[in-house]
Image 1 (cartoon, rainbow, N blue to C red):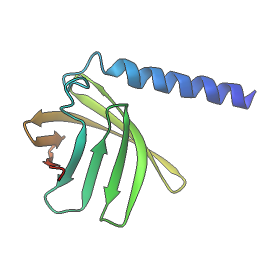
Image 2 (tube, one colour):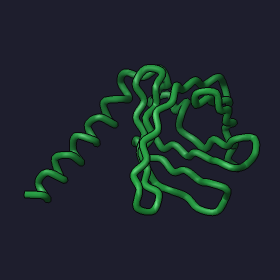
Image 3 (cartoon, rainbow, N blue to C red):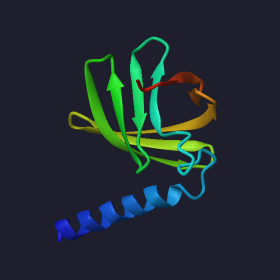
Length: 112
C-alpha cells in the first residue's frame, strides 16, 4: 500500500514538472533557464536541466540533486539536504545572462 501511494505521488510530481513548461514566463523550450548559474561570491551554483531536474552546489563543498517547476514568475525548487527535505519558492526573472531569484543575482556560467 505504501509503495502504491509513493508511486502515485511520484507520478503527480512528474506531471506537475512536465506541465509547468507550458505555463511559464521562463520558457523550457527556449532553454532560457537551462544552464548553470552562479552567484558573484562563488557560494551557490544552480544547474537547471531541461527535464525539471536540477542540482545545487554550495560553497564548492557538495551538491544536492533536486527538481524545479516554474509557474508564471515563480519557481519552486525542491531538494534534500542529508535527511531534510527543502522547498524554496522564489520570484524568478531572467534578463539575458542574469537571473534573479527574489533579490539574489546569478550569472549564467558559460560552458567551455
